[in-house]
Image (cartoon, rainbow over all chains, first blue to last red; front, side, top):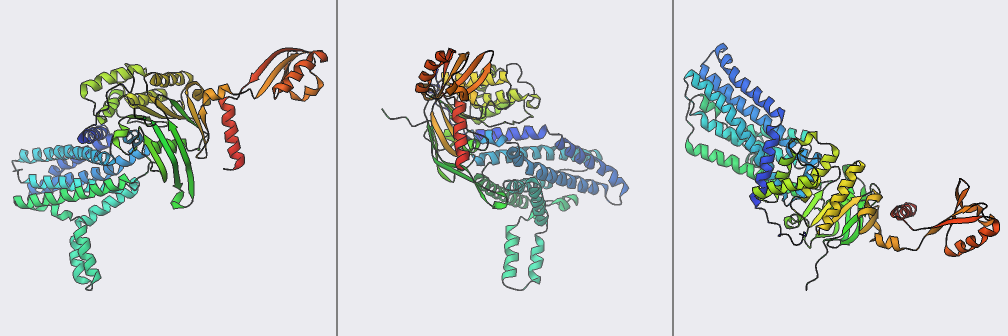
Length: 268
Length: 311
């Protein structure tokens, strides 16, 4: 049978390529020892919070929750930054992107597939770390249901940080991308300072600039309800919903920009 | 009956690269125009740095041309519908080394939307074709260079493309590996596929290609069939003489060994005179070899001319 006589190639579904790339990215991450090292360290931190709580003055339950949630957040961010900035770069550096993009895959599908794969890895990490924290608290007879909003918003924050890691790595090397992502994370947690700064600068352009920066930069404090949860305060449903919507929408917008930048790249 | 568009059409392709920090400009491909028809094996030949890989990357949509146009099967390479009908193997490929051979091919099969059962069947078939049957469960990390090249060819052929684009497919392979890849390329033509490959190994091109283009410094210096090369008039003759060589040709002696002298003559008239003069000088002509231009001669002539011309 000749090539021309064979059936015309089927047009793969848009989601097929994204799904295949996401699955491959997930495989790559779970077969990488660095991920296990980070995860093991995070689990160790969560478990050791039990010991630390016994050595510290105060409510042991609160200390375990505080340390546990902080560990989930910090190790999640480390995974987002270091895995996120290397995923796209490695494909270009090792030239695997050549064969991948020579297939019927659009560039945005590549970026979205990679992002979805890492999002899956982060979900797995957050679930495992949360399970360790919950087990620790249940063993003490503490309630754990109020942790859920904090864990959900930590995950949303990780998606947002990952989107920035992808944006930077679509045009810069991993070191610059990591610096850019960490800087965005730090600024995102300090965005309230633009409000304070606004009152101290002259009227006119400087104040407008403060407003623009405050509105444009991600406000990661919106996604941080750890303090409320640690003090056993409820997080209202609408607040959780709006915060999650804010984070997910912001992450999607950043990812769209990353796709646009990647679309214009040449692969020398 | 509508005229079928060429499988590959490059029209006035220009690609330049900026130097470090955006300074300077290097023209990698300079007005390249080519057409490849269905069922051909086409070789893009040229020395290192001639612009072969840049041309192939531009053909696959990995680089955007500054000027000119690429059409694969009548479509732009940026259109996934075109790439669904093309298989590509880059130079010195590197693949996901955390995957096994089967997982690797399964991934590429998914990208083409091939259903699971069909994927399994095709993977088994293509692995047998490239000689990796029973060796594909190991991770790609443990594959030799030849095995990587073969699994790369397998991914390029898995979706049964109409056009196969290969960048230096024989590079770095041992003689057995080169022969296997050559046989695979020839099998593609048998299957009605078009093959476009780049190489600097002229022997392979000579064995495989219906047509070649010689690219030097981004420009096509020669384009034509290898048959035309074979049909050409002899460029010179080599005459083996036993005994004394006529004095007029003593300066044309190429070699002398075991009482036999090899004399080079440029044309038929000179040959006729030498054949008449040799018995008179006491020698005997034992053989005459007409020498036609080989691909290597042609290649060196065009590369040399470009170097002398400084273009």
